[in-house]
Each structure stands twice: as structure tokens, then as C-alpha cells.
Length: 523
Image (cartoon, rainbow, N blue to C red; front, side, top):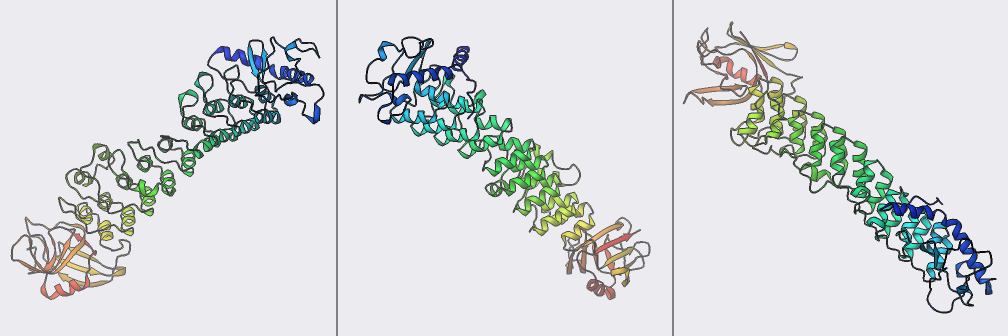
């Protein structure tokens, strides 16, 4: 058993009292010896400590010495104690304080004696002259057995000591063991009352990284408040895991979502930890942060494939559009190049896949598609789909991916030479499959050179610009107004920008080429 600990008190006088208490152990020995001498030889096998005094059938009374016992000659007792019938000596005047035998038993570690005193009606709530309750005296002494005995006899751990100190607060200030804390909490101590420094016990323990005692507080209903959020923002993975393992949930009063905060901090490990906490995953995936967006939308705007992967694997909805109009705080995360920022401000129904297409992040776009992202969805205002974002940037590989073609393994590609007014279709390993004359854009309607993709095909197409003009075997390039189609082909550029193919070659060209094929137009 540990020795007596230093008392804590509201003023200096309490410290003076405790100096005296340090000498009580010796004094108690003398007082107990006097009690034994008072009773003489114990009759009928009666024990030789406090209960050696025979009962007269009445209640216990505090028998007081009228002066300090220090200096009383051995064998001489005050005349008040010469009566033949004695009770347990529950009170003893030492100087200017009155201390009970229960107090002395606690301070001396006499657990058996304490049990017997309480069993015979001794008070487990009688305060020590210093102001501490018996329970708090036991805490000062680190006497776990005394704590259990007192509580089993009704000691109330909610009683306050000097300065309004709770028993739990005192235990924390004294660095009491986890077991001592558990004894108090199991008996009804409130784990959420302010402790040392006016803060909740759990906050004080987490600050000093006392996770062993913090675990006890949490197990008995301690509320961690913003601790979970703070650990996330500070990137404290050890503390975050500890809190999650013990069922701590986000603070209901928080204006920011826990998972969004982890994404914002770019900490994939923390994101994964939160998602692995079964009691948080679904709720947090649907939450919105202080920017007004969910965790996946922020991760996409940040162009963080690792964060997106962690989120979609746990079920983040890849088809849920961004909340529009967006807040300035969220726009600050959106890359300045591309068209996403404009659509977020002036359009609606923008999806994560559209954002990935606009950024050119093939890996992210593939991840979203593999998890069910719909490629044909249009924005609500300007009717753009994901491939439209890629087409405006001329992103050939992104357009191919969105069309279901592996950009790294082309089966065909098409070459057009503007100067020769000729086209070639090549297969794998550049094997030529077809060559044909073409007629491209005339002066003022010049066909632009560059790399393109066949983005849609219509066998029987009618011009969207020139009413009633038929364009059979039409294959559009980059979602634009131009494309291949059957038409008149002189030996020079004659179209309004499209690439005409002679009727005798148009059908064969149509059969060989497919959606997603790459087209290279050279000057």
C-alpha cells in the first residue's frame, strides 16, 4: 500500500493541517494502545482493538479526551474513561481537531479495523477536521481497499471536499491509479464534472497523454467534446485511433464535419481510420464540411486520388453532384485552369466525374467510372456531360476513357493530311486498312489540324446548322460541329469545315472506324 499523499486544499491552513496529519500515524498507535489498555484482557475472545470496548446496547458515541493524549503516562487514563462499559472510541481530540477512529484506520491502512468499525455503525461520511471525507482521505493515502470498503458501506463519491473539490477531481490531482478512478466511477462519480483547472477530466487527461486513465473515464460515460475533431485537425493519428476505438463520436455542436476536416488536411491515414470506425462511416460520408460540400467533392477538387480512393471504397456516392452555387471557401480549393470553377458558379448538376474530366486526371476518372459514375449525365443548366469537359480541353485520352476505349491500347487510328486532301485508316502496329480522298474546309472555314477523337456517330445525319442538308455516315470530332461524312469531294478543300468522304469510300470508312478512335489531322 502506498503511503499518505499530499493533501490538496483551498488555502494554506489545510496544508498546515496536513503537516499535523503526518504525525497522526504515530499518535494513532498510542491511542489504539490506550484503547486496548482501557479494556484490559479481552473477555470471551473479543478482539483487542477498538471493539475491545464492550457494548452497553446503545449507539456508538464519540468518547473524547479533554486534552491531547501526547504525554499521558503509560497505564494512566482520564477519569471519564474509568466506567466498566465501553464502546468503540470514535472520537479523539488532538490539539484543536477532532479525529475519529475511522479516520485513523484509513490513515494507518487498517482495512480490517475499518470494516469492523463501519459494520458496527461507524459513519462513512463523517468529515475529517481538515474538511476531507473518509473517501477522500483514502484517496490521499492511495488506499484502494479502504475505498472499496467505504463505498460498500454507502460512502458517496459525489460529495465535495474543501474548495468544492470532487472526489474524482481530487483523484486526478493526486494522480490516483486507473483502478482508484474506476472504483469512484463505478460508485456513481460524475465523469463529466469539471476537474482540476475547471476542465472536464477527460480533457485534462488527453492533454497530458494519460490514455490509460482517460480510457477509464470514457468507459464510464466521459464526454470527449471536441477532442476527436481536434485530433483530426492536428493530425494526431494515435489519439484519433484511441478515441475512435473507445466509441467517441464527433461533437454535435461542431460546425465542421470530421471526415471533411481529415480530407481538408490531406491526411489519408486519418481518413481511412475514420472510415474504418463502423459507427461513423455512413454518417460521415454524407456529411458536409464548413465549405458546404461533402468529403468526396472536396477530395476531387483537391485532385487527391488517394483520398478519393479511400472514400469510394467505403461507399461514397460518386454520382452525387456538387452543391451549387458553391461557397467562396470551396472555390478556393478548385484549380484555376479549366472550366470547372465557372460551371460550379453558374451551372448546376456538376458531378465528380465532370470535375475529374476537367482536371485531366485519368486515374481519378477511371476510379469513379469503376465505382459506377454515370458518363452520360448532363449539367442542369448548360447541358454539358463529362466528355464535354474533356473535349473543350482537347484531352484525347480522357475522351477515349469516357467513351470506354483504353487510351493505351488503340485498335485503330486515322490520319488526315490537309495538304494532300487524303485520309488513311491504320490498325494495330500501323497496318494500313484503308486510304481515301477527302475534301476539307475551304478558305474562311479551314479545318484545324490537331488530335481529335470520334465522340459520336450517326449513320443518317442531318446538319444541325444547315437545315435540310443530309450528312450520311456522320462521325463527330471532339463533340464539335465538324466531323467525317459522305459528300462531294473535288481535288481541293470545299467544305465548311467538315471532312467529306467520297460516296464510294464512305460506307467502308464507316465500317472500319469506331467510337473513340483517335484522329490526327496534319497541315
